[in-house]
Length: 239
Picture 1 (tube, one colour):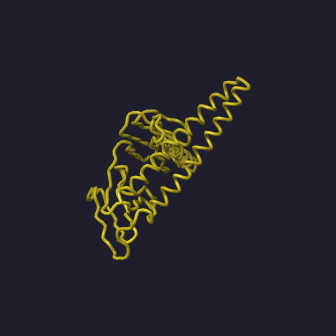
Picture 2: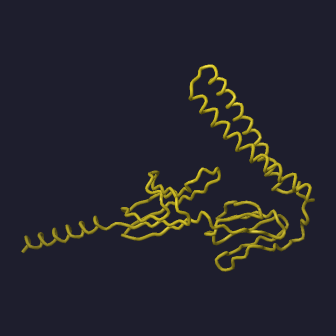
Picture 3: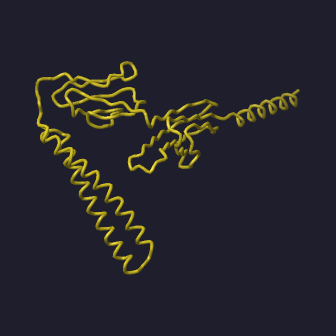
């Protein structure tokens, strides 16, 4: 009798052990653009927008990168936990954006306690809740899923009104970033000049490639500096 009990116990254990090994989790990743590099735990899994993959129980870091040469190409990163043969779906929105405007402008826009930018600003369409802040005005929460309002009127508190641009946080931010971008431009331009001198002296193609790379970075930072500085001038003239 004891022998039969042991045989049955071992059979049941083997059955459930085999079943648990065959049981896997399903992860689905969808995107609104056709070419997206999907990385899971730093390994490239796919270059397509739609992916379905079987994974064992565990924690996975998913990185979705837009396949583009643009300097401001988008990427998303999520950490997920899979267990018990579950199916999870992640949707990434690269193209869909919503323009958020406020009255008055230059308000802080936060999502999940992270600063997105200053109004007017474009935000990803998959965000559901925003927090709008501006000195002198009441904080406002916006739920885009319930009421996708694109223009938000802020309520004045009565302490600060018609704040001059030069006194705003945005002016300080733009001034600081302009100084930073100017320094970056000069730094990488000097690096490019040094590498080009080494190329002329040695004829080594490696130094010419480094020259081109530093010149590209310097050019991008110069363009951003010009946009930044141009907007500051525009705001001064507008007042």
